Image (tube, rainbow, N blue to C red; front, side):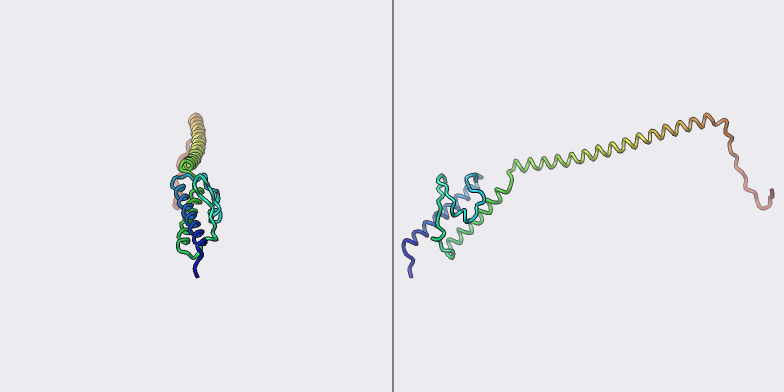
Length: 166
């Protein structure tokens, strides 16, 4: 049984439109000009996508045979291109990446700086406490030296031996 001539022409036209859409989308991705491509592009929206400026036309999937080798190759290319498109849209630009990286680095440095300031404040407080303690001990030593003449010094006491009795 032969396929009618009209069906073959529709299939050929659908394959050409399909191929042109895939090539156009690949070109747009390479040029990084994906603004005209619909958001959330999926296989179903890919078929319906039309853009006169780009020469992209809607085509009928009914005219394509899903077991046809040419269709399978184009369908697989379309999946790869749509995955690349989704990845490109989800990835921020280089400028945004650099800005985010610098912002994160700034936050890390600010946290480190705050930790150093806190450590400095703690050590300085300890130093002030120790200086006050030194001053207090020096004053006590001076007071003891001044009152030292009235203090009787202790003499060592000899331990009594067993032979000696009180």
